[in-house]
Image (cartoon, rainbow, N blue to C red; front, side, top):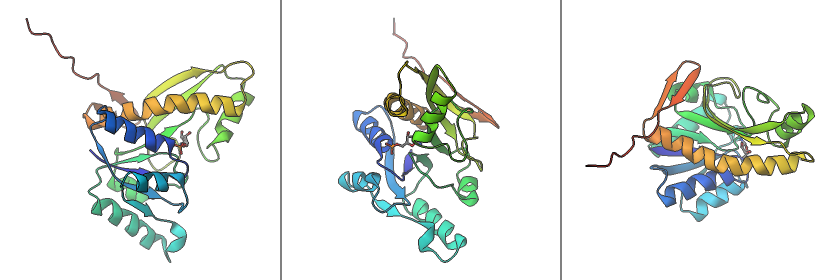
Length: 213
Ligand code: GRF
């Protein structure tokens, strides 16, 4: 599976994906890193791993059409067949969603469908979880469609909210979980074990190796 990773920030989930590939637990390769931010940590990480890094910002184009063409052409040039958003803060244009239907995923640092949607990113998510008095939070990998944080949920796992948690301590606990969860979800896609039916998605368990007798 040829993955394009899209990231706007430091890129710790991108790094977790690269680590899983290196360890042999994710049968895929990252063919390109796309960022709307020239100075994103993720861009530097791509360069240090010899992965092509494409800076594509809508602001650099005279029309939305040209911007979308540029995204699609970079994806095609690198033979992309799957897109993983890892802290990407821009909406994916409709034509890209259509071209990669059910082949774009995102990781969100809360238990969707709660605490998702416009404005729910970064520390704001954890602030909202604590303000709501939740006793658990977690991370969600979901399919990306035309709406923010609304596509079918592929994989979700929880962490406890601990008395005395601040948004920062909760964010750190959730992030550690994200680094396990994202490669695991991507592995299921790479192994063809994800079934999607409209608004629902399921992961089939990996085939068990039978002991020969
Ligand atoms: C993560 O918390 C992820 O859930 C969210 O953005 C953050 C990205 O962090 N979508 P990083 O850049 O991968 O470290």
